[in-house]
Amino acid sequence: MTSMPIYPAPTSLPMWWLAPFNSRWTYSRLLFLVLAPPLGLAFAVPLFVGLVVRGSLAWTIPGVALLTTVVLASRWAGDLDILLVRHLVGIEVRRPPTWYERDLPLREQARQILIDPST
Image (cartoon, rainbow, N blue to C red; front, side):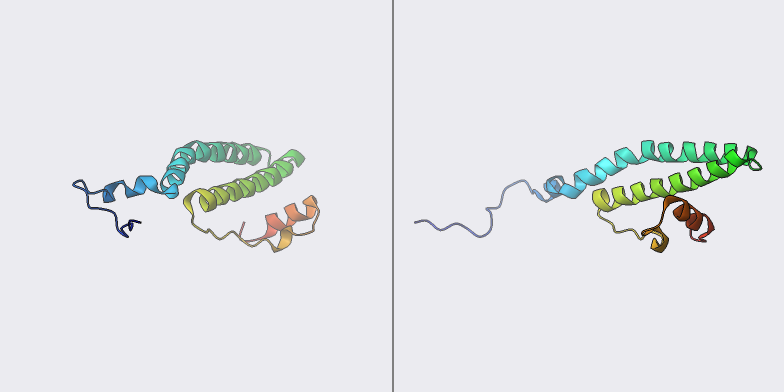
């Protein structure tokens, strides 16, 4: 029975520079860098357009409904971005408080989000 060496035999070419290619985090962070610009545009353009259209409809009932929709959509887009950062980059990001999102109907959630100063 031959014994196995604890440490690998030294080679002529140092392999320490290849270590990042063996890590899962390298590829997940690279995926995040690829996904971030298109998702940023997909989040920002509807938000800006929604706020501009909402500004022109500020004194009408559709303007109030559009404001609620834009605020809720921006909140959900932020949640998606936090989820991507958490899973692809591995950084824990704190989210604004969610005490008002539990066991409430959608209309009450929207009202609480609109009056919450952290939104």
